[in-house]
Length: 30
Image (cartoon, rainbow, N blue to C red; front, side, top):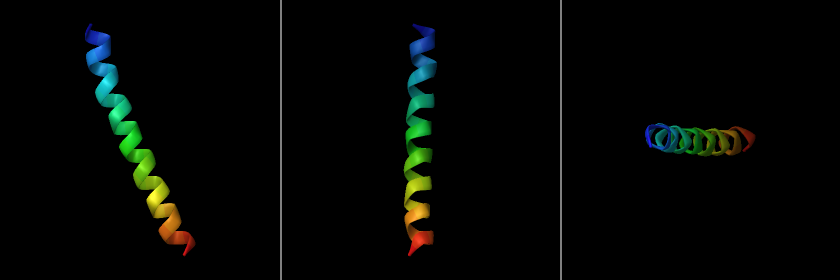
């Protein structure tokens, strides 16, 4: 159960990071 508890926040963090990177990339492109 501990692994799941640790994995979930890391996945969420990675998702947020990816989203931010994509948004910044789009802004830089324009």
